[in-house]
Every structure is written in structure tokens, then in C-alpha cells.
Length: 64
Image (cartoon, rainbow, N blue to C red; front, side, top):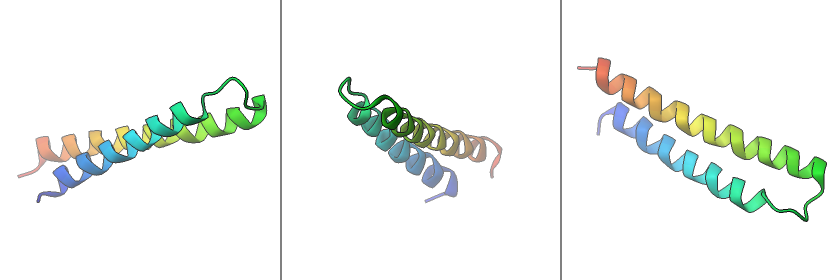
């Protein structure tokens, strides 16, 4: 399996985990400060997943 597909698949899985964490921590009864850090972590997980997907797409476009 080419590395570009591996990056895209890993990015998709990591991004999906970030979305699940975002939905899990996005509750009204959580303390404001704690919720802020949890959402920041979930958002950064989604960004990392998106970056891996873009890296995989770039490798697929520029690779052999």
C-alpha cells in the first residue's frame, strides 16, 4: 500500500476520533474552563487528522 494512502487513511481515522471527542465533550453541564481545554484538544486532533489527509493527497498527486 502506498504511503499516500496510509497517510490519508490514518488522517481520516484521527479526524474521526477528534469529531467523536468534540461531540463527547461538547456538553452544557461541563465546567467552562475544563470544557475549553477538552474542546481545544478535540479540535487539534481534528486538525492533525486533516493535515495527514492533505499530506496523503499531496503525496498521491506528486508521487510516482
